[in-house]
Amino acid sequence: MASTTREPSFNALKTLLIGPRLNTADAPHQTISKKVGLAVFASDALSSTAYATDEILFVLILAGTGALSISLPIAIAIAILLAIVTISYEQTIHAYPNGGGAYIVSRDNLGEVPAQIAGAALLTDYILTVAVSISSGVAQITSAFPQLYEWRVALALAMIGFITLINLRGVKESGLAFSIPTYFFLAMTLFTIGTGFFRYFTGTLGATANVELLATVSEDLTLFLILRAFSSGCAALTGIEAISDGIPAFAEPKSRNAGITLIWMSAILSAMFLSVTFLAHQVGAQPNHEATIFSQIGGVIYGNGSFLYLALLGGTTSILIMAANTSFADFPRLGFFMARDGFLPKQLTYRGSRLVYTYGIVTLAAFSSLLIIIFGAQTNSLIPLYAIGVFLSFTLSQSGMAVRWWKTGHLKSGQEVRHMASTLHYDPKWRIKMIINGFGAVSTFVVMIVFAVTKFASGAWVVVILIPLLVIVFLNIHRHYKRLASSLSLDSFGAPPRVKRHRVILPIGGVHRGTLSALHYARTVSNDVTVLHVAIDPTEAQKVREKWDKWGDGVRLVLLESPYRLLYEPILDYIQKIAQQRQANEIITVIVPEFIPEKPWHNFLHMQTAFFLQLGLLGLKNIVITEVPYHVHGD
Image (cartoon, helix red, strand yellow):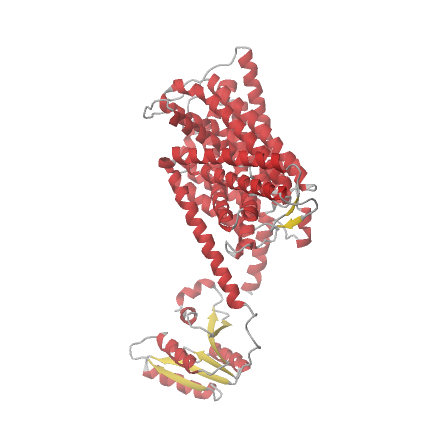
């Protein structure tokens, strides 16, 4: 009875947590509008305004407080780069209406290895996005409530658990749930910026006070330092690719809706990033681990601890959690594409009861939680690992698009060439499109090199090493699947085999009801049954023989002597000898009886002979292993 009540209880709990099951036919209806899409796919990019300015100032402060004034020109340069990347991805969205992330574009136009490099870069980026966004969200909380600083790791892990649960409920439902906090952040941030500019122009904007200066090693203001600050601020561009990856999630017309959402996102991001950087300079904000730039600006405009101040930090915290949701929307989808192509475990192609890629969501949650534990939920410790993968994927995607336009320009009018993910047609505007994507590729490549050089010693070396290692892993996984497919292929298999003899071997530890149940099953499989018992104690062996003579129904019993008290080895040796002597087209089946106690914890009171015997048998080739459970009640 216990087993029949546990399963419904589990299903009821599962339904309560993630919702009722969805039919496969419901998939086309699980789409989102532009407004919801902005919340789901743009929250990563928009949230970067909460820490991108901080990261610029953390570097510039090394040259003293006077160097902080350079933050605005650096922010303008980053905004220009954002415009270049946006225009490039706008073209990608319309060229790949079924999803045109760096992996798909690289696979289609550059080849297998570049595609795996893009995949490794993106998967790394998505994991880091969750870790950075959640850590930054916790930083906003601890800015308002410093007493929680020691609990930042626990808070971060709790947030990841919450967002994982929401995403397991489905894309549409999670999008609707996260739209409210995203738009609340936008409203509070734009209201704060508007109030700040009003006070600036009316001469009533104050300055920060009681912010402890960051203890740093003084450096000269060199070009290298400025480039470091620029590369740190380029964290503002993370998440730009998310919309091109998630086109299938949009309602029809998908490409048009995704493209409009991308433009909305970039315009809002540029305006907020430049405004926050400008206001930070005007109020004299200082980089500080315990008081973020948003916290300092809000403190000056509203007053520390006021309702609007707490609302600003609350909205900022919520968008940073939503930024992690962007990765939860895109990581499982990318994992599906790569697993479908045979470069990741096939489990990542599985869609759960809510039509989401369950294994991908759980995998992302596990790895990002591990990063948060390792780095103590410190945003600036994670940032050096962050943007190399982002700009590497930008570069590959835009390079692939440039190659695509070059190919279309060399087609004849009306000619079609089918690629894996798209169809090429002659495009009369191929030159201008190739120039746009080519310029975007060069720009992001330069930024990637700057980032790798300036942040290498700070931790970027980890990603520089990690991405090639991941590519090697992906290629090995692909090689395994290809070999497996070749081994399973029927192309050169010949005629179907005919079984000449079916021999069944039944190892037993004693003669009891479970043994007889297994014997009954064995005799339904074949009349050629051999029962094995390892004779460790002569007295016990004699009792087994006597019982078998009474209950064995004439089936032969073989006692295996074991003078060294070995239990599994004599059985494995016997089976191996039989396997070596078998004839062509002879099948050997080993039936392993196992009793199942009513209470799972009772398993610890037994030797688990069947389990260890199965482990040993799994190493034998061309042997069929069958487990026959016998459920024990009333124990």
